[in-house]
Length: 123
Image (cartoon, rainbow, N blue to C red; front, side):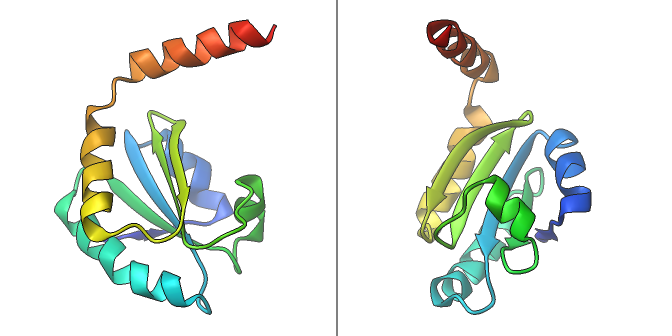
């Protein structure tokens, strides 16, 4: 599956309606973004069961603001609707591939239990 262009109207539906979503926050003027784009596209072709979305920070400033994007490119991942990864900077191709493999194997019951434990500590 090729990458999807995400915008505010289709963002929530994409995150909630798919098991694993990887996002690339980028901008047309950003040199590292242009270098990362083909890498991101190649890796997306290897994982047809994963949604790879691209968010243009110039066009979608609301989404960029919602995630506090200060540096681009930034890669963010959601599994089962929960944000599980965020890293600024272009990832090397092997690192992005490894990230997808690790996220596919991530036990979300453990993640939810950790989140509940953290919420309990904060009360």
